[in-house]
Length: 76
Image 1 (cartoon, one colour):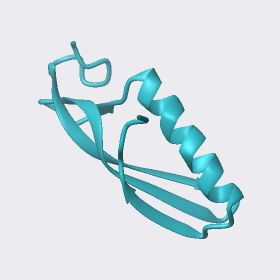
Image 2: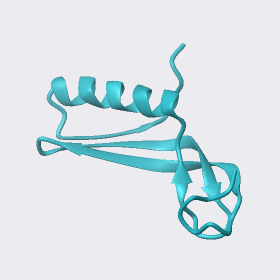
Image 3: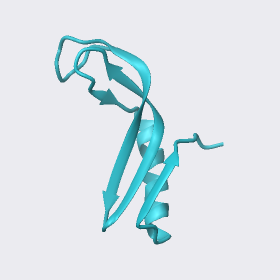
């Protein structure tokens, strides 16, 4: 797909790290599948994965973690 930020690059499949912060807690997901612009590096994560990350992060924060770093894994 054409990058909506730089308008010059095309996205390629790759992986990224996503950091989410809420109420003093930081949750980091590594190796998240994404589309990455080959020109500017902008990263796009699909809506299914985004919803999944937010749901997992809410649970982690609810369980009291101040900092949590984990490798992304799809739901079974």
